[in-house]
Amino acid sequence: MLLKHFSFSAAPTDDEGSASDIGKKFTKCSTCKYGAECDEDSEDVWCICNIDCSGHNENPVCATDGNSYNNPCLVREASCMKQEQIDVKHLGRCLGTA
Image (cartoon, rainbow, N blue to C red; front, side):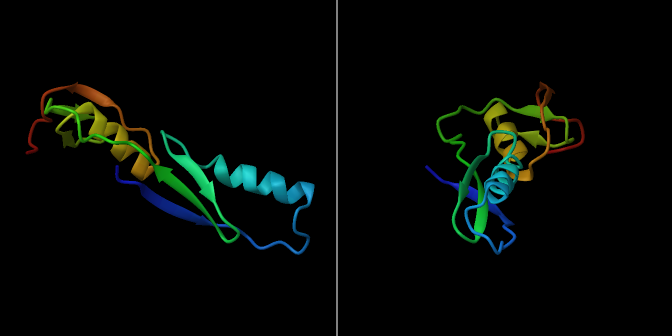
């Protein structure tokens, strides 16, 4: 299984472990959307897209971002990686795309 991640810098704080610091970590983790999971260490917050499309058959779809994908799972993966809402628009490839 391939883990795909991207990070958000966590701002350093002077008083480690304060209630406001916990709130900031929660806020940073809440930025992970569209299936991404939050993983954090002392310096960074990582959004990990743990979506495995390897077992999905080819079933081309056109997505709301105007791109064609080989199956709906890859649409979910793209949405997770780009951290934006991307949905299946219709079955079959988008017109004018490969």
